[in-house]
Length: 72
Image (cartoon, rainbow, N blue to C red; front, side):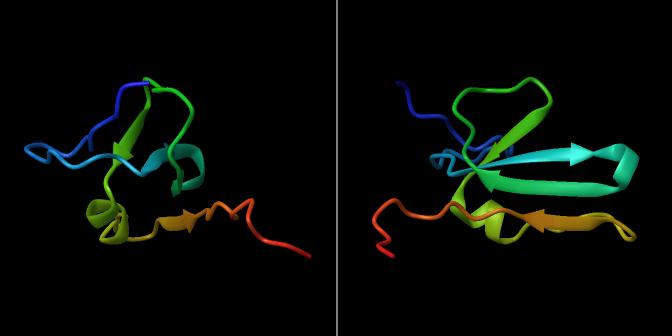
């Protein structure tokens, strides 16, 4: 699989997260990098995903992937 780069203009860092907007709910959803590219989402590097902000009145939802290394 080829590495996917950040969608931000002029950024050459490797993407680690996928951003999707839910316009009907005024929500920006940021989660782990999706398995494949999606036409209506944006792949972001670590720096840009950490600095993400949404328009006033919008909610940002951040989903974090749990490691498979965790033991009960």
